[in-house]
Length: 87
Image (cartoon, rainbow, N blue to C red; front, side, top):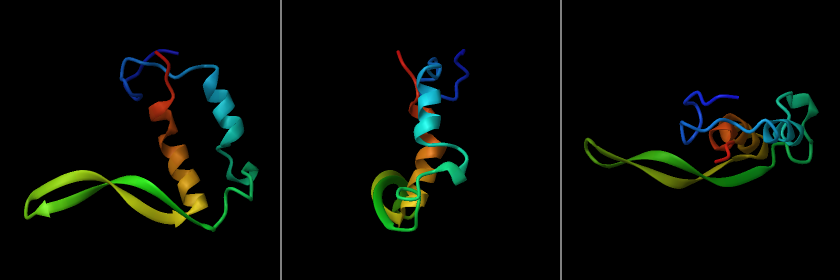
């Protein structure tokens, strides 16, 4: 696999060994996900959010976010490739 700028750092490529393992742990097909983990029970996690400090002045701050376990797993699935690299 070659770097394509979609991963952080942008010169890194995803690992051929790790990506299949992640697919096994967090399958893309929702029907194959564990019902004990992928459910509507409440979950709390930290997430970056744009916050207005004053009129016209914003900052990106990590804040507590509440949702369901299924939403948390969906968010992990959407973003895990940003962190799937080796140096």
